[in-house]
Image: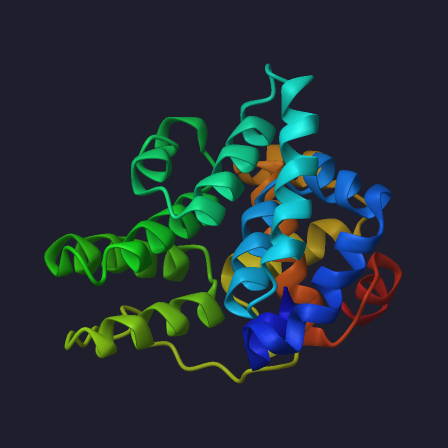
Length: 228
């Protein structure tokens, strides 16, 4: 996800291709990080790699078929299919299945993006909602991307936070990311961190990926060494 945020869909396509070629990786993605399903499909489509997107969606649907009680897995499969088919109605019906704020923002962004050509007013509404949620969870790369989409629609939105932070290093972490980093460095699992901070494990995972990117690390061990 990091390479896509930094350089666009084409820069991340190697990550997507690895998923498409390895069924075990696809299953791991869907089961352990359901929110990554929509990201993978979105990225593959943006890079004109529809066959890769289709493979990921099929895997997600197979897993969802035998995990109907897991709403996040079911939502991920439906989200991926809706993106693949450009099905606005299917996307709009996913809101009740999602509870994770980053995923809700991702859904709103997709809704807004699909409506840019047909319903500008609704597109602006959905994209603005996505931007606000992204900023609330400290997803600055995502927020910036949505602001660019809004500008292309003739709408300018100021960043709600006036706090200025560097892009990398410990000082670049948001207050929530700092809390997550300290708890993870103490040895807590994502689920334990989620319980401590009253957020979902998926949100913890998202923050952890942001932390790794900003600190240029790849593991909890490295994080524990860096936490002041």
